Image (cartoon, rainbow, N blue to C red; front, side):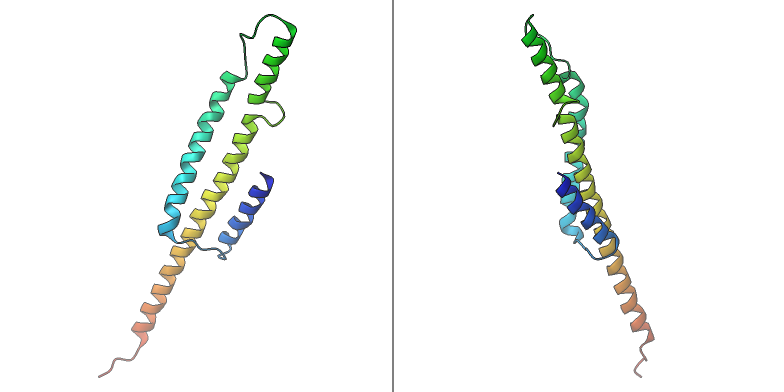
Length: 128
């Protein structure tokens, strides 16, 4: 996941510096998909607290250990779901932000080009 995060941090930096442009007609659906996934992972992350306390496995030492181990898989253990969801949310946020920045730069570039053409046309001598 660290590689993905690093890759999208680089792409975001490229978008901020104007070296990455995405066509708005394509990127809108990507941005919306990122927002849906961020919402889903955030909701799942919030529901993990109910899974962190496992019960009903019986009254013996192994059941207590298994209960603790399953709870730690939800929150607080090695490679737990809480951390995984958070990492995915961070990468999706970077993707979404990169898309938004690059679309804004693309649109700004289009406006600047249109203004340049308009001002060039206004400065042409009129034939008459």
